[in-house]
Length: 380
Image 1 (cartoon, rainbow, N blue to C red):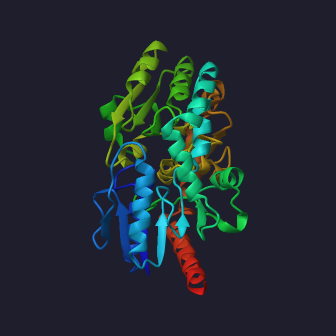
Image 2 (cartoon, rainbow, N blue to C red):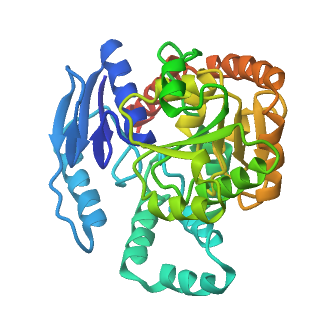
Image 3 (cartoon, one colour):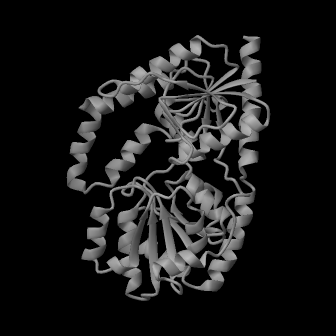
């Protein structure tokens, strides 16, 4: 089967969507698929894939031009399936790893102080950037097209229904998968020693958009928790702008408890050096890093705005916070995992849960949808 995977940037070690696409592409190649990758630039694509560089010009209208270029390329080739990750609209299967932008915008507004929210809402209505996003989603959710939609969580499915009236019979829910052979429990004492936190309870956040992923309330929770127990630490892994959060930690007198380690090509040593994964995110369709943490045997604390949280049984593999801005609630959840016996029990359950959502199982579910959609196309 000749499959085209479409993504804005193909970076094997990039964000969640990029890493998922790379792993899925490699799985397809191992299964004998004819894999074509369509992106504006490439880093470390797999051997055996055919790369199509999509013409790209930045500036106003760039996203719509990219989508139009994808439409042109796919019309010039005889792909059995075009699998789109959220950048264009000419596809057989549309799987937006970012969820729906309109839901993401609403949650972005929630992060702002109440007095600033009306201005941001007005910006979403009138600024060219947001109007372009709105036009892009209008084309992506044009129900006159024969597109089938893949939601990576029930939350995303519900947003597709609510905002774009996509009927249930055109949506399949397929949660993200994790490479459970690569991401495994372990104990990395070298990282702990290098941090100077050998005997501390270490919390971990992996993110690139620190504000969206809840670093502000997380640092505030660390400050509150430190009043009870100073033998804690927070490691923040990612390439976001850390300076505002360093200032916040200093203001709250917990700067010695928060360490930024930058982006890491291989995050596994940090998972294995940590005790609890915490992601009080304001919006995450189905966090791949939360699944990686589960696979490494870490209890996961996240929010109801993370689709991956739907997989957790609260109190078993981790816990769910209803409101990402609830610092007191987050503090109490984190406090529970200061007890080693609770962490060990939850960590074992976390690993068992991750094994049910392996990358192989995830990719096979997607392949089943390829076959069904190809059959629909052939009978049309």
